[in-house]
Length: 225
Image (cartoon, rainbow, N blue to C red; front, side):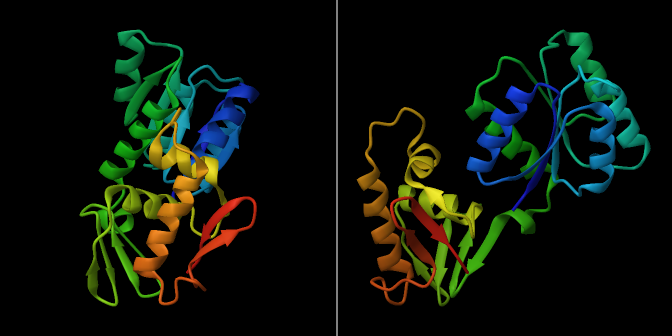
């Protein structure tokens, strides 16, 4: 699971970012000012930093410069209301990997984060996952069980990927609907149940008593190894 450090002093925005990123399957840490951001950036072993520019104690540019001067090469996505070209150029020159201006759409931000991670995290870290006898190749959208290819529909694969990215966590049906079918989707939660049943039929040794894709009564599902 990828870990993201959010350096943001607005508590409401920080809470919203944390919630959205955790729903998307990331582990999230939050720093509320620049000094704490530098401390956590040095020590938190994050896979990506989401950095505001207008921070108390130390602004985002100084945070970025300090981390880079200290040899911290964690990818940084700047998220700020400062949208002037000069601000963006300075951010990139200091070592930012992407720059998103507020207000922003959550789906766009998630897509930008995924793109930065794809560019900066070794492919072997992102491309493959295993549970039990099942192997999943995200890049090729390919699944095998006991070494034999399993044919999944696009939505079945997306649902499996959503569960894998939240491995070990209980995922409510509504979160799976948002992740797989999109925000504002008209599908109902029974659609999730139907697709989970198909995944079990194709991937579990005993679909009626699954070992990996588990139901959490009245909440949703959990994938365990």
